[in-house]
Image 1 (spheres, one colour):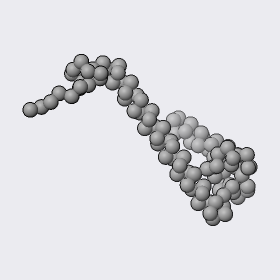
Image 2 (cartoon, rainbow, N blue to C red; image 1 turned 135 degrees about the vertical axis):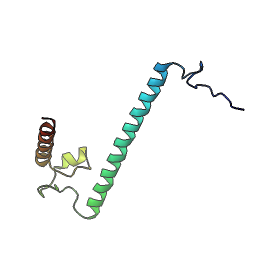
Image 3 (cartoon, rainbow, N blue to C red; image 1 turned 90 degrees about the vertical axis):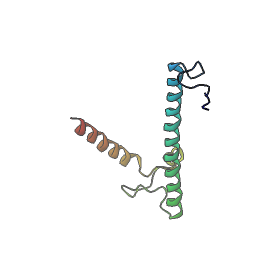
Image 4 (cartoon, rainbow, N blue to C red; image 1 turned 180 degrees about the horizontal axis):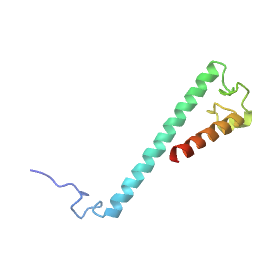
Length: 101
């Protein structure tokens, strides 16, 4: 015997309305995206702790200069000073423009 489950697609349950299903799918996507961002940040913070253990925390990986304490306080996981980060983001933006041209 096959049992019917409330909320199945073809019944009058709480998920019968396509708008309700769409909202649930949308919420699920937001949750998954948020989780992914949090996992990425946790990984970057773990890497920052490893740099701290190796006495490399707060040193720009691009130029070797100290990263400003205010920047580290705001984003403890950063690996580049503001000047180098701006340069890296500029290169990345140029790459996107070139790729889409």
